[in-house]
Image (cartoon, rainbow, N blue to C red; front, side):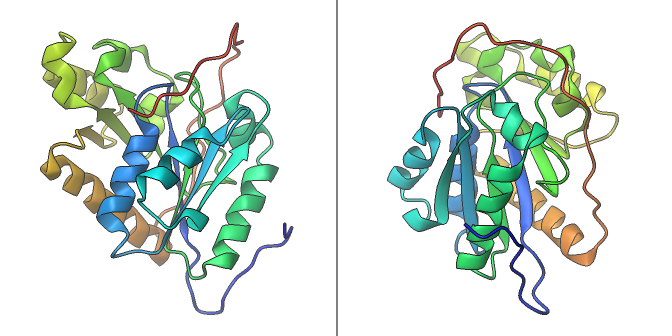
Length: 238
């Protein structure tokens, strides 16, 4: 792998967009949805993070949302937040290689491995970040706070179509999320409701335009809270 950035004169660097959130909130499915809806419009590449496998990368390749070579997995070998915040070297090398191999790349999506409510990306790795919750995680989760919930560039409340089946008041959950975010955007999303998918795509178009014009500056949502993991969790895509 190359250790130096690859650039092409007069071509804006890809928007590097991080996707973080707890296990099972639908991060991989959200990435698949983005790719299905924007791949004809933008040149997209994806990096996934898993502790011991490339499971999420294989899921996305099997879904056929992008050519397989545009999807690469990083095996972190440690807690997921380590490779997206504490030591970003592995991810940064993967980013630079993808941007070189498929230049020009318009949008580079970086998925964190499933972690907890405190995990966020280093601004040295991503230009903007989406934090993903889902209604099946409980209607009160947005009130629990954490840097991703309160200060990510976009908070997605995912799988809102499941609200009636898990006895969650989706409108109340979204209002709680808005109250926690001091005016920052919140999106209630279901991949089965195209109008919400279009809202997601419109936000990505907007943040990419802000990045390309220099109006958007990456910032750090906040430090990771001290924590430990007592056991490994299986990854879920949906």
